[in-house]
Image (tube, rainbow, N blue to C red; front, side):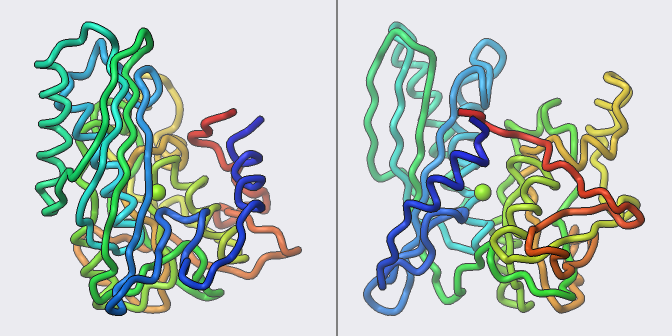
Length: 298
Ligand SMILES: [Mg+2]
């Protein structure tokens, strides 16, 4: 079963509730809270052999990535992170020093954004390292930006160069929390998502949620040097890496305004759907891009 199939089944199980403003199916959920502020909450899991390789990556880096993925979800909704709780299943015998280094990575990543670890649970088992971080944030004066607001005619932007993150960047990226808050306070951002699974796949998610299509200019897509390096190793065009690799943790956002913030590049435009079905196309091509990139597969 593909992840997409499982997710659409999961989304169909939703039951609406007045104080749940953003439900399952976006980067975080948003709940109405006392004082007019919204509480945003989400959870994200990292697994040895899937999101990192414990034989290759030191514990401090693994901890940092686990926290940063959640902070990137905060960025995706222009949410201010506040606190996190962590659950870790440690391989038996990994030792206290290893657990401390994991915690140091989590803590240091959180502290960059004044986000504290306020609780957690660890246990040891015969399996590999698995960690879940749940994050809690506040709207703090900025309405959460969901995936669902893209309008026909909006420009599509990304916040930085893409592709080849597997060479190292996927472990050491900086979540775009501050940039997202700046963008949301200066421009009418209609939708936003962070790129965890690849430009094509994550832009497709905006299109699905917003019931629109997208056309992107391949020449406009900022290509990371890592995508070019990886291309020289595996012979695949660098643009394919930029479109599909994922774990860039840059943001894709849409807006009717012209955005002039450092790092933000206009890559395309939101169009009407042809037949009610969302699609992402390269300009000049009639074939929709297959949403490649990362699929968890269940
Ligand atoms: Mg996300």
